[in-house]
Amino acid sequence: MPKTFFITTAIDYTNGAPHIGHAYEKILADTIARFQRLSGREVFYLTGVDQHGQKVQQSAQQRGIEPVEFVNGITELFLALWKKLDVKYDAWAATTSDVHKSCVQGILQRLWDEGKFYKSSQSGYYSVRQEQFLTDKERGPDGEFGEEWGEVVLIEEENYYFKLAESRQWLLDLIDTRTRSANPIVIPEFRVAELRNAVEKLSGDLCISRPKSRLTWGIELPFDSDFVTYVWFDALVNYISFAGYDAAPGADLTDFEAKWPAVHVIGKDILIPPHGIYWPIMLHAFGFTDEQIPALLVHGWWNIAGAKMSKSLGNIVDPSALAEKYGCAALRYYLLSDIATGRDADFSNERLIQRYNTDLANSLGNLLNRTLNMAKRYRAGALRRMDSPLADFTNEKAAAYKKQMEAFQLQAALESVMEIVTRCNAYVEETAPWKLAKDPEQADKLDEVLYSLSEALRIVSILMTPIIPKEADAIRAQLNWTGPVSMEQSTWGLLPDGHVLGEPVPLFPRIEATPAESGA
Ligand code: MSP
Image 1: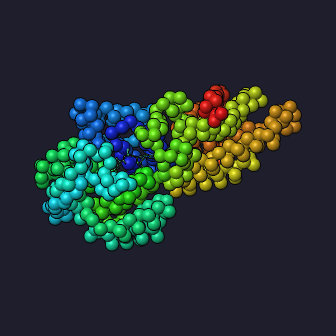
Image 2: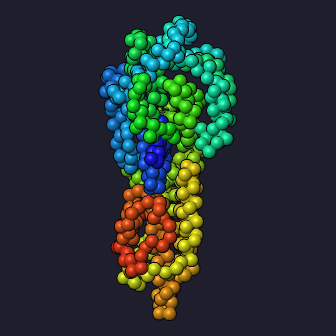
Image 3: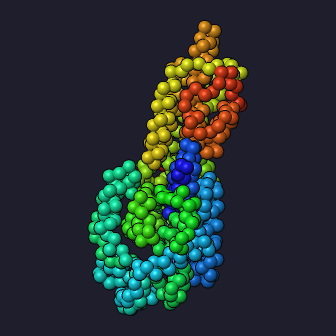
């Protein structure tokens, strides 16, 4: 049986409203999932929310409500956003759910029984106001902890630790072997050196507990009810708990193993240490084989005018408002076409409008509208199946698109599609069908042009399906193409002789930019 294509995203913290970075990641994974489905594969797309931890407990306390009430409110915002942005997942990972809790506790109990944790006492600086341990990173330029931390005391605390450092050499070897293979552990490759360097320096172990005296909002350790699980140990497990994993000896893992391993889509900030170090070592400890260690697709960040988005700078971009204003298609298209997977990019409304107007409204929308109008006027919408000078070009670009999508290079894949559109528009100018229509001797040539454009548009609509699914459907409806929609249908020549096109309806209305939006 062919293996399910399993893709996950980072699960978003529920301590604040969703922003454009969250939206990008979910749309990126959604598009990859849709492409794989279009290619005939069984797909399992898992995304969700990371609901435990100190920050959530604090935010709830500040509002005078229970953490569960607080996270439920924020979770609703994420759920509504994915609906609005047409992000379609197969399972929803909410870490407060019972399935997840019992999986995490099952794992903890097993690792405890196997002696993979130890209890130890450590001392450190602790901010009473912020209820957290401080490290040297939190010291100001004068070497002191700033006023924001309030009273800082040296305390000693007992906790449970997971043995990390003893797996250092195993992980280094795994990174090296996998990087040389067809199944690299980190994509894109330029991130591997960073990870390798961090693993080289790995010395300490991972503290996997928090005493309930300072944090109660978490999953209780099954072997010591005075502690809850450290939020990252809890959160990472979502990737397997919601896919049917069970740590109990002898558990039936058939369903789980038909899917696993996943491709994890994550941002560059959470590669080191959680996904690149903790997670593989955790899976290794659970008994996963080297081949079962998942691949990490690490994307870059959307910045604002070169700066990080942050609450303090007040430059957080709300994806829901953008979708309301410009439409879901404009937002999805922009977020996938204006950034190379792995690299950073600058977000601006101006660029969003520009890309939409140039590519979707002017190039694709116009081509569709022109083609249908000409076919209607000159041939009452009926096509003759003719040989076409566009056939090879379009097939080549569709093949390039497929390779690029498989390699997660969505920007390049979109360029391949747009090259078909650009070629078609140039072909209209070259052949001037409005002139051909006046000359009865050019009837065959006119039929060739109308068939070529319609067929190219049919293929473009298939290739655009993962990116802007609703609009791609609308293009096919206008072309009156009711046949199956799959990557197999993206080869030239499937519109039959005598096919009658549908009615032209303007699809991508131009966005009129305000002076501020046009950079004036
Ligand atoms: N809860 C953790 C992940 C746990 S995964 C087991 C977390 N949450 S987060 O809400 O802070 O971030 C969620 C994802 O959004 C991360 O992959 C992060 O890299 C991504 N992004 C956060 N800001 C971003 C941008 N400005 N641009 C692109 N992605 C960004 O980390």
